[in-house]
Image 1 (cartoon, rainbow, N blue to C red):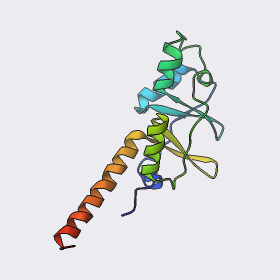
Image 2 (cartoon, rainbow, N blue to C red):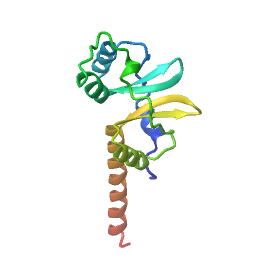
Image 3 (cartoon, helix red, strand yellow):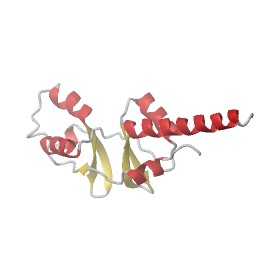
Length: 145
């Protein structure tokens, strides 16, 4: 009955979509489209060096008239990435995402990337938690408190 943890969310979506920093932006866009996700982790070997999102593309490519066929991902990715651990609560994640205006959080455990969660995942988890709480309260009220 406690708050859904990130570990529980990740159990439902174990896949990690990543690209290398030297890949061209066009390939990153194709991968976003193919996997129907809003962001890719940028990995150099096993280490996280950035995140590339649709927003990075819009802000740093389109606005500056850069070519998707020539620009490497590292030039337009967000390199200061805010990360969480699997034991972070969904409520805490929602706070970070809202405060920092970010839609994707890489999840690291012992320095290793174990997944990514999106704002959509977090909202769903928070809503599920609320439904659970409401059902508990209704039961409590019906039983005469």
